[in-house]
Image (cartoon, rainbow, N blue to C red; front, top):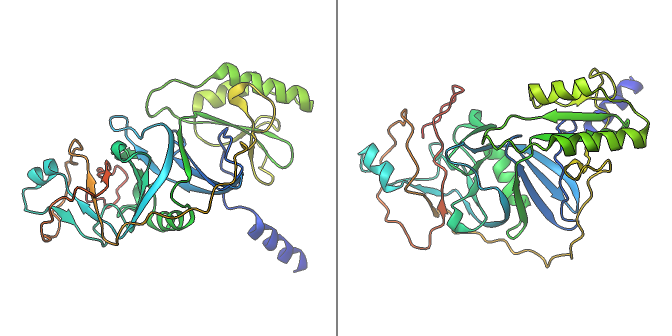
Length: 323
């Protein structure tokens, strides 16, 4: 019983995301840093330079891509009202101009601005949790609602948030084994630098006296399953401890390191009044299976209301996505 009790304690102490491949990122050494990897459909949260949380997310489709680059976390709206764009109002033709907070609201319980408001991006909850993870939104980053609430309450406005596009992860576990994962290319960018990846594997292998099969590397890159594959234990090993990323984008065999930054002043959250309207860009389309929504009092758009570009689209996995 003592041995079993110890095992349970050890399991409880291990991070829940220990087996998730980690991208090559140099997080800020101080404060919170958000990283969203599009091909992986994951949001990585770093705190004071260390990985503290990983969330599954749904990102923009190929036709309505989530904007890649460096952003900042902006204002937050709890229990937001979704203002329906005029184009969708015309198609619904039922007099509804907005969806109030509640179970039918596609934005879920919270909306967090991502980057310049002109981009129309946000991180928010959903009324269709089965649609997360995925590549299916109109540009926004969709989270399961409990995750979205936890994220919004943890990460202050002004925190850096990078949207990246890494089609591979090269990690080392606690036992010193090398793991490779490869992901699909949803935006057809074809930007995987296999030369840098192989150079990094070779540098790490030489430094650690390990042999890696070139055929196994080729197989992982061809299959792109997203699962971590052990390159130094015949692909059959189990991950020990947490995975740490190698700085493979530069061809290095060393671990990725935090980026030194000056400690920021205490953050002050930007929180909009509860129930604030979140507008959707008029260029978004409406899914063919859009269901009628409950009528609500028409509300005219306010000039000060933040914009968003995510009308949750029709789900392909059987989820009850109304919009």
